[in-house]
Image (cartoon, rainbow, N blue to C red; front, side):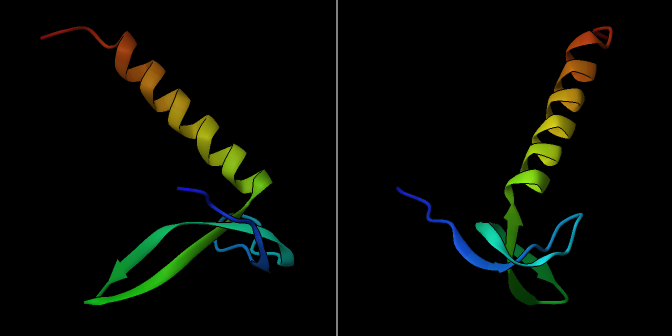
Amino acid sequence: MTREWTLGECWLYCERDGVLVLWVGPLQEDGQTAPIFACADCLNRLRAKAHRYHAAKDAAPAW
């Protein structure tokens, strides 16, 4: 599946409009959905956060 960049509004951290964004998935809230789009800068920031999460999880002691 090819994901295509489109000109639009970033729904993540920067909230810029008129930038290239990628659809990253739906937001579900109160039984309704909205499409979430993110620019490259915000996607990189989100990826870094995910990497930190997994690194911390891997470093946690086993119970």
